[in-house]
Image (cartoon, rainbow, N blue to C red):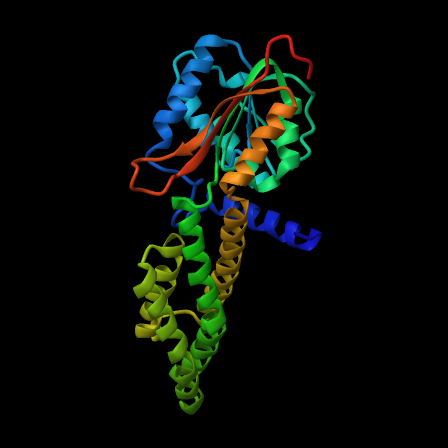
Length: 327
């Protein structure tokens, strides 16, 4: 990923977490699964019991999903917790939920905190995006006797499959030109409603029809919830606005189309980032070796599966540093 791509991706996540606080947000929050609460409850409960005053660092915190699990553990002390995210809006949202937590806006691969000070370093699908340097940072920040506990994207896996499906759906809709064609269609439609020649409106409708069919084919193939319901929302909203076009403000409709077009592009960026961050078994083995070469003991490294017949949800990675080990 070049610097431009990296900057655009950071902005995409920043816009995402900024939208998480807004009234128009449809479906926000970090990646989650029904399997996660129990695994975090056990791991964090064991940590708080063993380290009642232990210091915790959550990497790639998002809106603080791991902190929400920690808050539920009896005896936990959020004033001993720090949380890092590259998005300033993620940190702002997290601190609204958990004001006692120290928030740090930083790249996970370059965290401006003192080495060896955290008894537990956690991440749920956050450290994955920043690559091997973020793992090195987690190791650097871990105190003697401390431990790491990560949930990481797995390839192949359930979340990886969802990302792959979303990428296909979003790319097909973008390639169809749906949003710019809809913009042209509504521009001509509003003009026709105000008495202008109807011919441009009819021509724009003819151009838009193949894109509508492609969007409907995507929803038929992948289901209405694909890409976080965004495409179903796009389809239904455009239909509603068209059926009641005389009741809408032209500027507001065109601004909405511009905004949804940007959001679709950013969602594709995020899905691609998550897809590319997923580790296959060989890459995960190399990560475990990286931890062992740094002097840590890998205590648990396995796929998290709900059943033998289903794809795994995540990699579970737990490692520890001996109390006498240097950092």
